[in-house]
Image 1 (cartoon, helix red, strand yellow):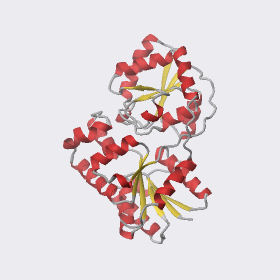
Image 2: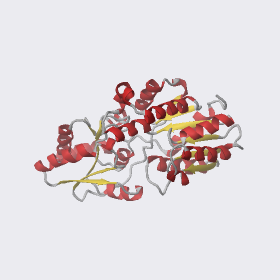
Image 3: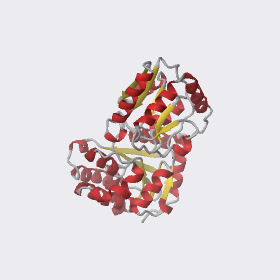
Length: 342
């Protein structure tokens, strides 16, 4: 059995995809008898950039200094923990895998400029518009991606974008899909409440969503929109009683909100700019996130009870599962088949 170190910027009780992912793989690895530690941000959150990275580097360095041949590190992002963990692992010649769940550079650019560019267009179209800080993030990210033993993506869509943008060796890159859990019971909706959620950041495209919904309500006043940023357990309770789920992000690599909707057999509307499109294209409704009219039309389509029941049947017939056991099997196989030094 191995020692496994999970590095993550957030961990429960903090909310977010990486926090939930870290918790679930930790528990699954431990069920198999592995010794698992989690390093996450504490004091670092209150420190300036670079100083926080230096502190996390030393925390990681001293944690892995006793690691043996079969031990390895999994970092759950490239920016907050991936770079310092990769540097520590390289110095100590220890095995490290980075799972790439999002794109910090793309998110940062959108937050700074308000330019809602889809991820697939960002690198070819906007690389010349980056400021000094963003160019530094690009260089650090490229170094990090090229100095680890393996990269894990949740979708082929993002893998292809990153390989082209950063000039990556595809033989070191793998796809481990996100969690598709067994189906779960949900209550009948209390009304036509469309549920959305996630961090209140510009790429979530909520301004267009709110505008589109206002237009839809002129036609069907019985529909309502609920945008929530609440802890995971509370969000699931809201989801269980919702009518449908809607997520209109300008791009979203593998949105947990939509995967939870599928798990609870809730019809959904989401962006076509997503890595889960191929998996779920026959199950849900996909919109052009730059077209407010398209969003309105899809809302009204799903508000019709006949269409709603048809979409619900599609989701109920979707039986694909990818459990935390599957995910950890794939991560362990990747770790086993990568060389210790690089």
